[in-house]
Image 1 (cartoon, rainbow, N blue to C red):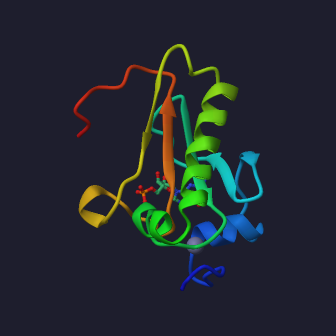
Image 2: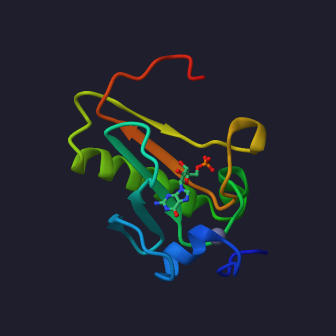
Length: 119
Ligand code: 5GP
Ligand code: ZN
């Protein structure tokens, strides 16, 4: 099972510190950092420290850590003062849905109006 740091994985390198990132929260099992190409005033990525390719694989092998990703997302939303205004948590899953980094991650978006349905 591919839970060790993957040598060719950008987000594993952020977990180990080999690639710098603006980290806003770190827990025993997760890291939250600002997206390099923000799509909203707050755009934070929340990742598990373990390498799994997407959220479904993470939930299947590590359900508690999948829950931890959501807990961290909620904590960062509160830190960013988004609870009253609302925010969105998105998991792009598969290249057809826009996933480009195949290490599970939640996008936390807020600080502006968010249309529904998303594009
Ligand atoms: P995906 O398209 O897989 O759902 O999301 C990947 C996200 O990672 C994109 O929003 C992209 O801007 C972000 N990203 C790609 N490379 C880096 C990087 O080196 N640092 C940070 N902080 N974000 C990155
Ligand atoms: Zn990884």
